[in-house]
Structures are given as C-alpha cells and as structure tokens.
Image (tube, rainbow, N blue to C red; front, top):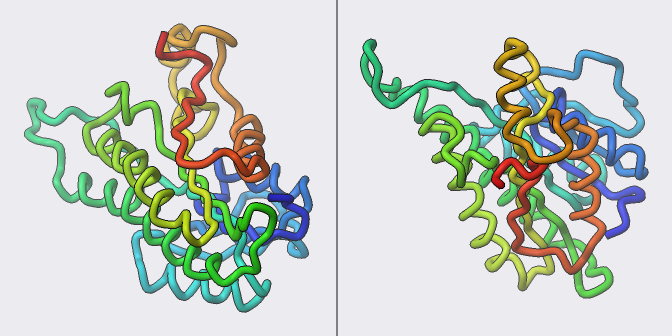
Length: 247
C-alpha cells in the first residue's frame, strides 16, 4: 500500500516506538491519528497529525475515537498498535504474589486494547474501495521477544504472547476483506522502557544482541512498519526485530 495521503491510526504514538512510527509515516506523506493518554512532548504538524486522548482499554472511547477519525479524514487505511505498559516483577517474592490488578491492567492495555483498536479500525477498512490485489487495509501489531523468550514479567510476556496469537487469527479472519495483519516482536529498544536503565543494566541487554551491539532505535522500528505497510505479500507474519538477541 502506498502511504501517500493514507489515513493511519497509531496508538501510543506520543513517545517511543509509536513516535518513531508516526515520524516515519509522516515522512511518507501519510495522515496520522495518534491515540495516546498524553500528547507528544514536542510540537506536532497539525496538518498531518491529529492527537486524541484515548485509553485503549476503554472500548467505548476507542470506538468513538476511531469513528471520529474516519469522519474527519473520510477513511482509515492503516492501524499500528504501539500502546503498551510493562511492570517487571516476579510471580512470587517476599512481599507476596504479583498484584492481580496490575496483571489485569497489563492484559487490558497490551492485549485487549490491541484487539479493540484493530477491530474498530477493520470495521472502517472493510468499506474502502479495493486497491491492487484487492487490498483495503493494513494492521501492524507490536508484540515483543518476551512473548517467546520469557525475558520479562509473566503479565507482560502473557499479554504479548496473546498479541502474536491474535495476529495470526485476525489475519485469517480479515483476509476476505482484503486486510493484511502482521506483528513485530521488538527486542531491546532505546525507549522509556529501556533507555532509563542504569548503564550496567543496559550493557547486559546489549550483550545479548549479536550485531549491532546496541539498543534499537524507534526510527528503525518505524522503517519496518513502513515496509510491512508497503509490501503486499507480507501477511500473517510475526517478525523478530532484535539484532539477533535469540542466538
């Protein structure tokens, strides 16, 4: 799908991977709706980007926001789910078990939120006129290497494992509407999640990568998102994006 003048809904787009995604999409001439709890820290190009304060775990708010995006821009072509939270803690320690309220909140944002946003976006995508190969829309979800490597808390890993399974099922279900669905499993990225760690912790993470020996950059994530949008043969794929951290 050519991104020029395409309408893209991006969640979690005010910082980190979501911000890198929005900047990459804007550079390609896309129109952006950023659904996040807070606005970006820097100035935005209001001609190309619309910010909407939305909690992705609130279905009513999600549905209303996406309907408003479609009404303003006339269509929705792309959905990129980047909103997510993480809390590193073991299942059991001296203080007790992992807080169940936090477990539910993690799943509500990372998994349920992803589903709610993509489902309501797909409702509008299905109405688009078909392009080459009958394509009407593209969805990109953000999972994590924690989904397969047990590299984070149980709540985060479970939620991201759900995103990978969800992606495959949704790709199958939406194929008849001409909507492609893929997911990216980022590794250790230079975002708020990892960027604020002590230097020795960051060094330990970098040591797990094969090459290059560094944290990934949000703009590199955005480049991959753009490729998944543009390449019509990419569908139902779970892509590791981790500088070889698994080998």
